[in-house]
Length: 413
Image (cartoon, rainbow, N blue to C red; front, side, top):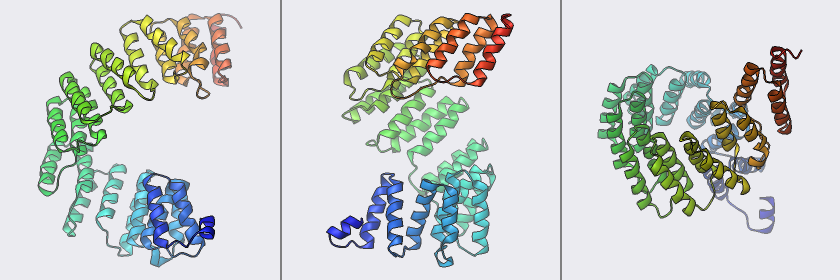
């Protein structure tokens, strides 16, 4: 910025703030905060609204403690409804509901009249604090103060009733919202998700149809969400219908959609369609996504088609495409089959499979190996396992303790 000013004409404060907005839109929070710091260092007086933006950025970049320090360092005139509202939101984002509720009490003591945004933050705080019953009273308080509710407070209200397992009231609130404003598709999918948890699949399907009716067809995200929820319902027909509609809507199917579709087909155990869609992805993809290949590998293993799964592993390993997920899928499969030698062989190949970064098996996976060696008193096996962990540079004292137990049980004191 200093160089810019030396070489070109001056910029207005509004022009710089426009750059701040652009940076935050692309989640370049550090750069946006640096610009605001630069402005303040040059003597710019930020409005309460822009101080709220700065407060939010401090919270995201430096944490909630730094945000609190910034807020309390502001002069009293700057501790406005906007800055209080922003700090309430920061507490919610950091999971500090109790602090947010304490702050709201301070706002009331200062006679700061809450607006729609404050009420919405407050409702979310009650929900996160495990007090869903207070969400309804806050919602009523907001309406009694003459503030009309939009989709956001309704969303939180519906979530609170779902938390309390009161789906009858949820349906009534949804009907009420339909009279007030257009219902966002995500509210219907939220309902569908909870119907699925209660195994009310018929109601879930109805909610998903409504979500499909109101969603923006040009937006990809709702398609993926609805597709995955139909799979959770176990409805193969609807999964395939949504998939065909998605493909006809967008010129190019992205990896994300293929991933959701293959996960769905795997969930409903439609192996034939799974193979077909995987082959389609293989011939169409631009960027290789090993997560998609891992779904197919796991499906082959689940069907006992080990040769096909191994062929994919060898091929992707040669291309440098395998990842830690591939290692875990094979290792866990062989451990489930009690073929510990094959599982150990996979672990020995891990360095060739995970080339992007240093990798170590999870504690759960290590424990499974150690438990087998201990139960079978297999000293030679556990020593081979130690060598493998050593090559992966992940030996620790806890592992040595477990190995000593195997020696003791085998009489190798």
